[in-house]
Image (cartoon, rainbow, N blue to C red; front, side, top):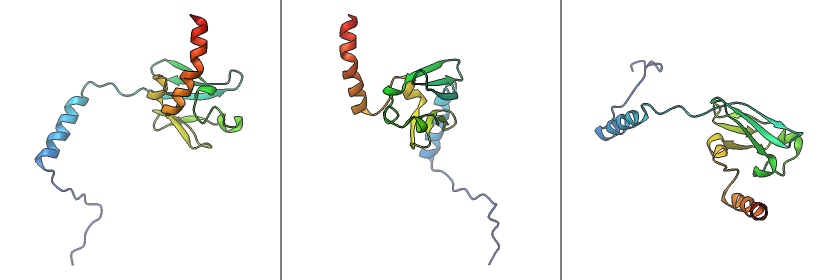
Length: 130
């Protein structure tokens, strides 16, 4: 029996369709800017907000009450927040809960049901303002 060096890379040839898909993906990705990344995140207890600094120079502040699962979590667990997934998300390790940065920038603070509750809570405030 021949000895096989496990360090040798064995690569199966790709079919023409797969090769074409890879080529198309690479062509579409040329010139696409990399995703924004979180450079730092902290919980500002005095303002009851999560403060996120982003590598494009933006600063995002979100009231804790807007964030699903974080709104009702104990403060000692909310305080421990960190960049996650190479900076494309923020994570509360003690709560095992994370939010993607793109979603937060778009105003998505939870699932559909949570967002409906937030909209309903804002309706009276919007009516007073008009």
